[in-house]
Image (cartoon, rainbow, N blue to C red; front, side, top):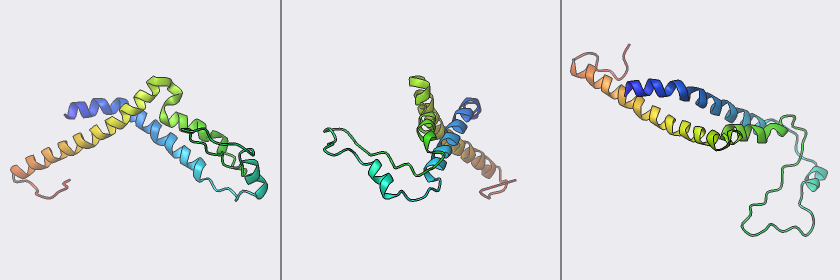
Amino acid sequence: MRKWHRWLSVFFAVVMVWVAVTGLLHYVVVWWPSPEPTAAQLAASAPPPGFTCPEGWRCIAPPPDTGNPLRPYLGLFHHLHAGSEGGVWGEIVVMLSGLALVFFTVSGMWMYVRMWSARKSRGLRRRLFWK
């Protein structure tokens, strides 16, 4: 298990860092402080009179432009984070990195429990953590 854990981590570490950084950039843009929209900005973002959202669609008005300098990059960061800029293969790699995160968690815990039980059976330190 340790060999699989090491070899898979070499590849997926790069992908997971990519996903983490683009996810953080996405939320930096979303949470960037911007002033409250004015009445004119809210009116400009409203749908035209008589507009009805087609059945089965999810129609959401875009947020009003409040002068956030990073807002134009929100879609780019989202697509980079989801892997959709890489097409189907990009999305597959991002999905596999999520599965790899689950694998690393389970295999890491499994290796730790095996090492801990081996130390306990030899009568070495019985503490949960050791040096």
